[in-house]
Length: 302
Image (cartoon, rainbow, N blue to C red; front, side, top):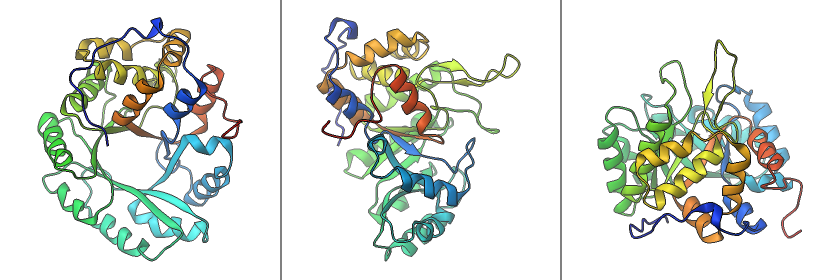
């Protein structure tokens, strides 16, 4: 479990030696949850299950977490796996009732080939009722109330509950894109509370950029920007410094700074930043490979 150490300090990344292959593998292993069925990918569930299972056993699979599915589709996903081992994350959207989660957990209890990696729900005054299920729980933090919701989830975490926070980094019809300052506030807020977190929606690429058109710029945060921002926050950086890191668009500089992370740095970063959902997991993996940070074709031990 992640535990906050307030006595840590910032160490300039570029002054260190190059990161080892082991450190980079550890940094990205299991980081990218497979959110293929969610927007903007919107993959049909049979396709998502088939693709997810096809990656199992391939070198790329080490970087991929569970397949995320709406709780209402959990039984169908289990049936589509046809007895092949599969890890599922069960999701209900913020503002939705939690009953489908309870129903899905009950229905999957006798499916030996299915591992429920965790359940995810939006924060509400009664979110903690799910803790009785004994599965890892992720709670998406709203904009309002922001600090109160973070405090609520952090209190349960400090009491030993298997819970973490989540924040949406991409835009939806009801959720405007959160800029660098807003995402930095979440990262720093979690680190100051000593609470792990995951991210969702929007981290499709390695670098901060606009990925749409001039008329519709589609701003997106970058995975490497987030990794380094988490490192900065763990070192005690203020929110303004973390926001500045999130705004960096120099791919070579970000890649070099990431490669400079030591194995201890990586352990701390991943203890805080546990995962994020991405609808096309091969996109960030391919971009990380292009930047020289990992080799998705190399088997473990090579």
